[in-house]
Length: 133
Image (cartoon, rainbow, N blue to C red; front, side, top):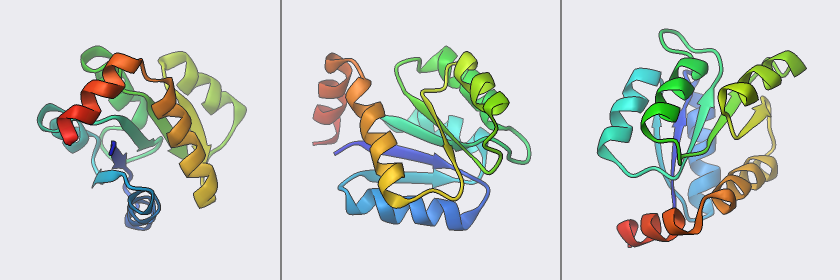
């Protein structure tokens, strides 16, 4: 079982991601705040982060910068309703693993999360699996 952290100011997105990913056997943590997400990372082992690009307070690029500094092994996927090429390039240059545009299909979400988990170094993948068993 892997742990996915969903960070989005829209409750419907958080709840939808929780339903989709929980049905695939993942443990899902969620919050509407980038700051709270960073606090959760200090307390909980997380394998992948889904984070909304535009949120009040701390946006995804700020969260991404903090995550790259403290947990560079955790892939971060940006979720946005503004799926422009410029946004995608900006996120990828900052270190995002991938970019998903709202609205997204359940299969697309599962596919990108699965790819992110498969790209993790084997040692980290097995370590995180042991921690959650």
